[in-house]
Every structure is written in structure tokens, then in C-alpha cells.
Amino acid sequence: MLVYKFGGTSVGSAERMIQVASLVKGGESKIVVLSAVSGTTNSLVGICDAYYAGDKTLVASLVEEFRPKYDKHIYELLQNENSIAEANELMEGKYALLRSYDVASFSGVQEREIHAQGELISTKLMHMYLAEQGLNAALIPALDFMRTENGEPMYDEIESRIKEVLATYPATDLFITQGYICTNEFGQVDNLQRGGSDYTASIIGACIEATEVQIWTDIDGMHNNDPRFVEGTKAVERLTYDEAAELAYFGAKILHPLAVLPAQKKDIPVRLKNTMQPEAFGTLIGPTSDESIPVKSVAAKNGIVAIKIRSSRMLMAYGFLKNVFEVFETYKTPIDMITTSEVAVSLTIDNDENLEAIVKDLEAFGCVEVDTDQTIVCVVGQLLVEDSKVVSSVVDALESLPIRMISYGGSKSNISVLIPTQYKNQALNLLHQKLYSVELV
Image (tube, rainbow, N blue to C red):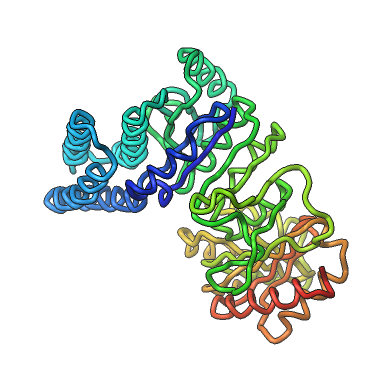
């Protein structure tokens, strides 16, 4: 069995949904994971913000903004009068639900319920269209089997539940379900965070031991650089799980950072495909990649804060690093990069929510300097740290730019450089010119 995942742009219009239907029908049995229609989740977030602000009038106004978009979607997607009536009734119910919450008691529980509605709508509309086309597809609610505890997937329970659900449809080989949404240990509607539909697909793939997990987007695989800022990029045909995970974490938007791990545990290939160019090979992620290409890709992650802590003593006191790390543990703030010397430690974070409190606590151990508006540029490939030519090429390519930090050795597949964000585009282009020259590859 295959697992297909389609993102918001892939189901963003009736035309796109029809195209998705053409891609999933026939062939090997499959589970199709859908995101919300593009733009829907952002709108739902706005509705929640209005509830928190106590503005019920704004809530009603924002809900009404859905109507023309989904009226058009339904009109262009469905042909049967009964189906159209059912779809309109579905949306009226959703509009009523979105308006129904009490501003005084609105909380995270209701917020997560609202966030779930986008996927519930897109999958229901897709299922209705498939039924109109005479396809025997089953709509299996993710809330019936996708379980988390403390935000982590409960794999054993998900596996037993989804196999039980599938067993109730012995004559069906096409299943539609929602990405992103789940229920937590309290039985409440919850989610896997933004972009979590990729994660859903990988979890399902692992739990049913799928032949392959396919992530369908609007680009033909993971490119060797960011095509938004660099000309002449091309799709990378093969990546290892570790290479793909590094790229996803450090800015490659095509894939959710956590999406590789579940599939990797079961050694299930993950393929990135283009909905607009289904004939393209895409990118295949698995245990091995092409060793003849040392540098697979370059990615960049914005919104980075660099923090330097200089010890108040001439040499670092015993336990200095432990004390520094405990501050970030206290505020549940992950560290991306770190470099150390005898008297100082520099590190980066991508979440500045508790920055003021973190700096205040760190000042107990020494002098603290903070640089905002930084970007991590990440060069990824196999065994990069063992290839002196690649390392020197990275440094040479960026010699004209003000490098704040450079880190390699912690991962065999990653060389990371920290620069001010204003130089990001320049850095990506310089690295592209240098790393993909004939001499290097």
C-alpha cells in the first residue's frame, strides 16, 4: 500500500482537486492524506485571534469571508445536485460551528478544534467528488486513529487503530484522511503543528509499513538550492534520510522537518513529487544517495538569534556550559548551532519568545551579547566533514561576507554558517556558483 500526501496548494481549487483525483485513482491501493485548502488555516488562525480579542463581530465577519471561496469551489467541483446540496449543507454547518464559541471561555481546546476544520472540509469535498466519479473510496477520519501523548505520536496505538479501521473496508483500495489533525491523551482535538500533514503521512506509512510515502507539492522535488533566490537550480534525485532531515530543518520548505523520521525507522522510501509535473522523477529519500555528488543541496533558515556568553572568569569555570544549557532547557528553547572557546560560547536559537528572560538568566554567568536578524546557511551532503575540498570551498565562497559563526563536525552531512540575513541571497548564489562548478562535482 502507498501513502500519498497532497498539500494546500494541491487542493487549493476545484481544478487542483480534480487533478489530484486523477493521480490517486487506480493502481496500487493507497491512503491519501490531504491538507486544508490553501489559505484556510491562516483564516482559521485569524478567527481564533478574534475570539481571544473578545470580538465576536469580527469573528462573524471573518467566517463570512469563507463563503465566496467555498461557494466557487463547490460550484466548480461537483456536478450532481444532491452532492452540491450536501456540500452546501456541510459548509453551513461549519460556518455555524466557527461562530458558535463563547469569547469569555475561549481557550486552546476550542482553538485546536477550529484549526482542525480546514482538513475536515477538504477531505469531505474530495470524498464527495470521488463518489461522483464512481470511485469506491472510503473517508477515514484521522481523529479515529491518530493519537498523540505529550505531543508525540503513539505509534503502537495508531498502528492498531488504523489497521482496525482499514479492515472494515475489505473491498476498498482507496482511502482519504486528514493530515495535521489528531487527538491527544485527553481525547481532545489536537494537531501536529503547521506543516504537519507531511508528518501525518510518514507516521501512517510507518504504521502500515507502506511500500512508499509520496509527498506531492507544487515543485518537482527538493532542489540543490532555493529556486526563489537562485537561478539554475535543479531537483536532487536521491537523498539519504539524514540529508533530507537536515535540509528540511534548515529551511527547505518542501518537507516538514519531522516527516522523515517515522519512515526512516521502518526504512520506507519517501518520494517528493510535483502535482503539476507528475511525470517528473522528483526526489527519492532513502538509506543511500548518490555518492558521486558530494554536496546535495544548500538551504537557509531565517529568523535566527545569535547569543554570545563570555565567562566572567579568565578561563571557563567547571560547569559553565552545563549552566548555560540549563537556561535554555528551562525556557524550552532549542539550540541550532554552537561554538565554544576557553572563555566564551556562541550559540543560535530560532525562537525568541523568551529571549529577554534567557538573556537575564545568562547574565549571571558572564557578559551576554545578542545579534538578531541572522540566517543559518546550511550545506548538506554525504560525509562532508571528511571532504576537505568541500569545506574549503564553502569558506572560500563566502570569504567576502561577514561570517558570524561556522559549525561542522557535529553532523557528518552538514556544514552550517551564520551570517546577517541581509547577505542571505548573496551567500546562496556564491555557494551555488562554487559548489556546483565542474571542478567540484
